[in-house]
Length: 253
Image (cartoon, rainbow, N blue to C red):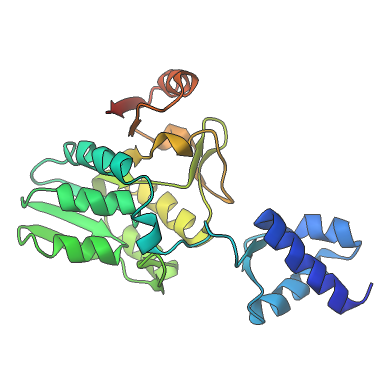
């Protein structure tokens, strides 16, 4: 097989599966993993795919980085009620982290103007909280992801090392009782993992459609959660599984 043919088929496979590992491509094309890595590097430079740790993800994958304006109109009612419930967990004087999810943005809108410190990687959350002068807002900085209007990368991760908070509120693309929390974007997943590590309690804000699924990049096990806030569509088996793991579950109407 000619190199150009292999490159074309690699792009087709990545787009078909949304993501694929270097080891899989090596087996499929009977070439070394080093050869595949060089292929992926070239294809990324050509804008045909995006490399990730150990593989590649499709540039056509709508979950890779969906524009904020699109995410904000998806499952709106569920996100709003989950966000309002989450806001009730915040008390005067708390130090909290909010991720760059649309649910976190809805939560920022729901927070009262009270003495509070909020660390976030979300531009939308920063802008929303700037209207509330009693809230001290800290932005992580970092590499800007234009579609999600959020910061990621080493600088964002290192900035979180400077702080310890009592509560973190985040969302994710998927949660599986065995595989744990995951996200389709590797950089977001790494930052969410750091957010969980820097907090006493972690509150996961997800609608019921996220359960029983796995996304490309792992964030961490469900054991790192204090409470899951979700809607009534969540399966009874999932609720039992969370209860068995001593994770609180709040069901909103």
